[in-house]
Length: 354
Image 1: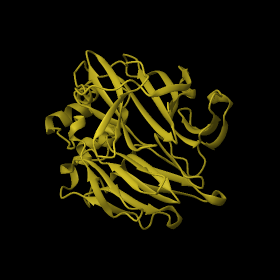
Image 2 (image 1 turned 135 degrees about the vertical axis):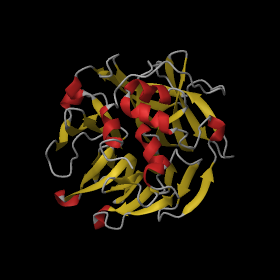
Image 3 (image 1 turned 60 degrees about the vertical axis):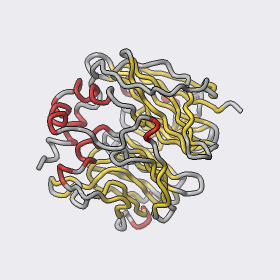
Image 4 (image 1 turned 180 degrees about the vertical axis):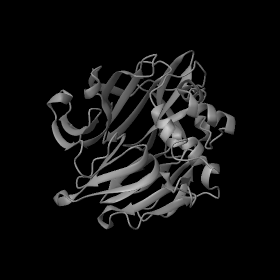
């Protein structure tokens, strides 16, 4: 059994290392990008780098800044001009936050390992030590996340990998929606959760959509957490399983190059978004030493349509995260230098062309 330090804690220390020149690409052709760039900004200043962000409105963003704060910023406005919503050390704001969720009443931040925090109506706040967190979202005070619990150094003791709870109840009712038979170090969420594959979003009708990554398909739940149906994703080249051997796991923990090298051999979901037509997946593939991003749009007949995104190809150590609002799509693109440190971060807002 692995301890906290030898598993997710160790991975966090490698999260910005460079990768190997491997190869994984989407074979299916994509249509021309039906998107236009509304706004694009970039920074090399470490303390001003946006880590992740969510739309507040079509013209305003809530952004986690690497220097240790959450700011509100108008699209088109420099980040340093944004008004601070949360500051480092303030109750409810998690140190080294890499995840963010917002529903108008609650702001939730979380690190990739162990802890999440929230600030709600009237400034009421709370924190929860959980385990591994791949992604999270909040709607009407209800929090959904992909990850697993940790209990005394044992990961995934209950086998749960998708959870739902009520912030108004301080998450005391947090329950697993998806439980796997594997426990502890044998859980695929422990072995592959370090790759931050899993994604979750509440859609406008409060439907909960989950890409768990370590089991096949896109899962659609009712607002109450009842599984409605599973949308196949194998046509996109997504494995839908962990696929990491014990030897690869050990190598990834020890080497940032192995971490990115393993990722670069696969098609990855880097963002789950709500489009005007339904669910969309921002896919990362890797070919000829470059990372590429496309949008997979779910059609009414449950097939996927691939669309090119107006993003420049990135080096092996680049990745994106994102959000959506109506016809707008936000993408934050991280590019690391050959020492594995953040070199450049771009924030791009796209709008769907009618």
